Length: 217
Image (cartoon, rainbow, N blue to C red; front, side, top):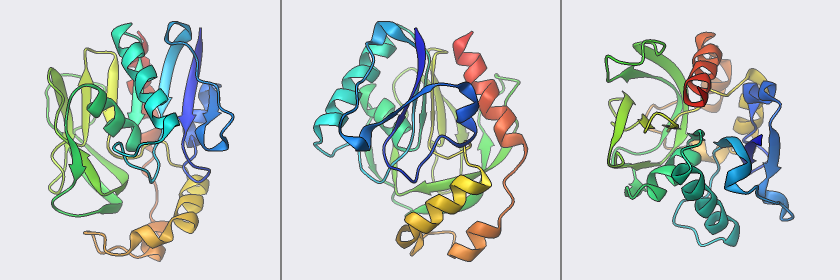
């Protein structure tokens, strides 16, 4: 049994999740080896510029693993692309957000009274153009004005986050420098410089770790 983090591109790193001492599987290196679902204690799926409808062999294999882990009712956390992959595996549609690309720091608001460990509002990093419908039997946790399905929990073992809470100052810098072209045309009107100078909310780390603790209990 082990903890695994699936990383899709070099510039979307685990950030604060490195403290979990999980095995990081770098899907982009080509010689990756995915674990068997039965051997998973925790599966974390990071973001990336590819989409859930892309027909990569590794993406097909990753979806198969996600489905198997869900069937076994083991904990999964999906971030950005990771959340979209989980949503698709659960039968939900994934498509371009009609309001445009969310890029930069913006608040999301809690949509449920349960889950007392979750704050009523979070200021988080957004870096996405796609979104998803809420999967059947999933509970919406957070929404924003531009994107209603920002986070969900499914069967108390799966959490999908459209946004990034794992980000550190160092990983933010790497993301912005490597994917700066994606910033252009974002609906918030943020520039590269404005994103880089934003102070990351201190509570994001503790809240993310509480989410992981919750699905692992």
